[in-house]
Length: 120
Length: 120
DNA sequence: TGAGTGTACTAAGAGTGCTAATACACTTGT
DNA sequence: ACAAGTGTATTAGCACTCTTAGTACACTCA
Image 1 (cartoon, chains in turn red, orange, green, purple):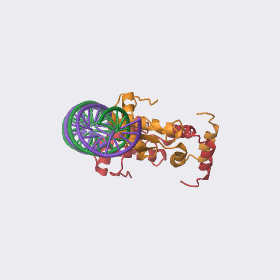
Image 2 (cartoon, rainbow over the protein chains, first blue to last red; image 1 turned 30 degrees about the vertical axis):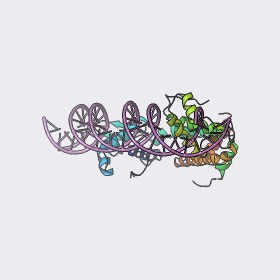
Image 3 (cartoon, each protein chain N blue to C red; image 1 turned 60 degrees about the horizontal axis):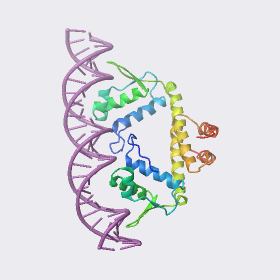
Image 4 (cartoon, chains in turn brown, orange, red, green; image 1 turned 180 degrees about the horizontal axis):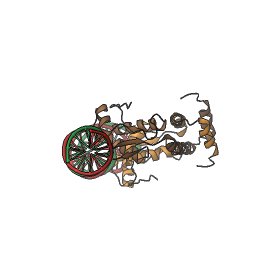
C-alpha cells in the first residue's frame, strides 16, 4: 500500500508523506479512517518507527491527519482539503507563468500547449 | 550586480548561478560578453573563489557560459538558450497539469484562471 | 617575464538531514 | 490494576553538503 524506494533521492519520510497525501486527497482513505499505527507501518516497511513518526508529524502539521493520543492517527476528509490544495496548484501555476513571462513567453502560448495535451 | 543573501536557504553558489542564468536569458549579458573573473567576483562579493568557481562550473555544465583557459568565461547568447528553456518550462507545466488531474482538476479550469491574470 | 586568467586537489570546519535506539505517557479492554 | 497498543520526546550517530583555505599548475597576453 505504501511503496518505499530506497534508491529514490527523496528521504523515506517524505515518500511516506506524499503517498498518504495523495491517498487522502483522492478519497481512497476516507474521512476519519484510521491509518496504520506508527509501529505497525514501521514493521511492514522494515524501517524505523521514528521515520514513520516524522512522516505522520508532517501530515498532521499540514492538516492531512489528526492525532488522538493512545488511539492512533486518522485521516481528514478530502472535501476539507481539496480547496486549499487547488489553491496551492494555482499558486504554483502563477509562479510558473511569472517565470515564463520573464523570458518573453506569453500565456497564450502556454495555454495553446495545454489545450493540445490529450492525456498525461 | 550579483546580490548575495546569506539568510537565503539556498547555497551561495546556487544564488550566483541562478542570477547569471537570468541575466543571460534576458539578454542583459550579451552573447560572447565576458563575465567577471573567478577571483574578481570573489573579492567583490567577499566570498571564497572556490564558491564562484563552483557556480561557473555549473553554468558551463548547463551550457550558459563557455570557458577559454587563460582568458576568462563568456556568456552564450540568449537566442541559443531560449528554445531549451521554453521547453523546460513546458515540461514543468505538463507536470503541474498531471498533478492537478490527479485530484480531478481540469485543464479548462486552469486555463480559465490563467486567462484572468492580468499582470504577474 | 609578469600579471591575470581558469583548473585541480586536498583538507578542515560547521551545519544540516536522516535514521536509529531508547524511554516515557496516554488510552482501552480485560 | 494490568497488559497491550498507541503516540511522543530525547539523544546520538552517521552521512552529506556547503564553504573556506591553501597550494599548485597551465594558459594568455602585453
